[in-house]
Image 1: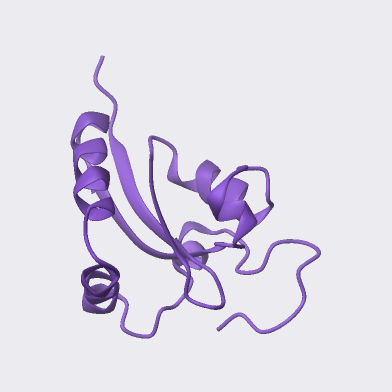
Image 2: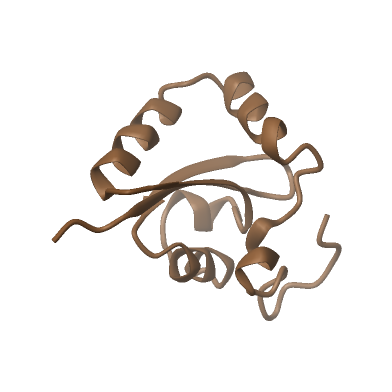
Length: 108
């Protein structure tokens, strides 16, 4: 059985970017927002979903993640701004809270 997948980019308030892959986007974004996804994204507070792409298979999503991770920062920013020029937190379109519980401040 083949499962679909997503390649996504999370951003911190200061502009640090994290590129990842998952088969369950809503779950993974929730994990990032609540600090339960340990590692780089947690350390740098990458809690805003700023880009995502859906694929028919997880293999395609992994290949795309590897491609994006190989890019320079400027190319990643261009990708984000192509579809999300205002850098909105796309989590709201998944029905998730913009700001995780316990985090105060602006959402922008």
